[in-house]
Image 1 (cartoon, rainbow, N blue to C red):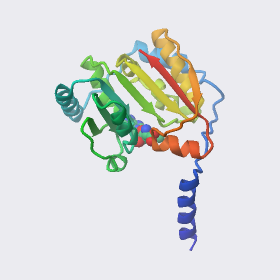
Image 2 (image 1 turned 90 degrees about the vertical axis):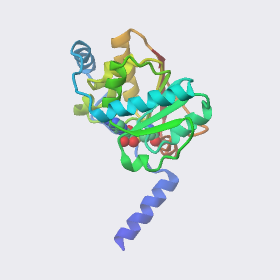
Image 3 (image 1 turned 180 degrees about the vertical axis):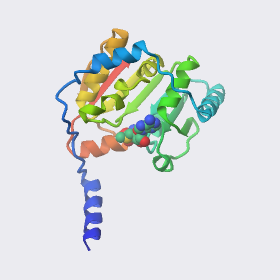
Image 4 (image 1 turned 60 degrees about the horizontal axis):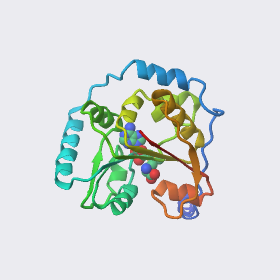
Length: 229
Ligand SMILES: C[S@@+](CC[C@H](N)C(=O)[O-])C[C@H]1O[C@@H](n2cnc3c(N)ncnc32)[C@H](O)[C@@H]1O
């Protein structure tokens, strides 16, 4: 009885949007951000790249030769809704969705100018950087915020792969419901490149991703950071 009531509550929460906003024991930008970013800039990340990542990049290269157009990356694409939305917006271009979750990827639908891969973004970005790839448009939509203060190095800008992610270039767009994440990301980019770009709050009229829809339905504020690298 209790379990079925909980199930009803969960479905109800999904319907009306009852997602809690990010809470953190960290006030403002992390005090160690600059030290951490500089350490990663001075000590290039040495993680070996597993074989599967080479195969994925080969497949992307092959498809790109067939399709031509721009290369658009949807990193952490989840169920792929954003990847498909982007494919509608950019029918001449190749959109690649990458996520580590087999469960989320199992919900992805196929489309002509889209490729989906199950992979660790860390492996993918390291190898793309090693191969000198440049991405035309790069989306990081609602990355896991890792809001606990001690988890700075799990956020993408605090991770040793960050310099490689930035070197992939292009127009990089990150969206989040936690403004601090974007404030930190923006500052980390400025430390690395000297380029500053502002963060804007936005009100979606159409939803690019399921997380965007869920957060908006829960009355949360949404933020967007975009920079041309
Ligand atoms: C909060 S979800 C957002 C999903 C989607 N972008 C959206 O807005 O609906 C974050 C996604 O990033 C993926 N992810 C996190 N770390 C990853 C990693 N190292 N490699 C690949 N995917 C990762 C998770 O599996 C998850 O699907």
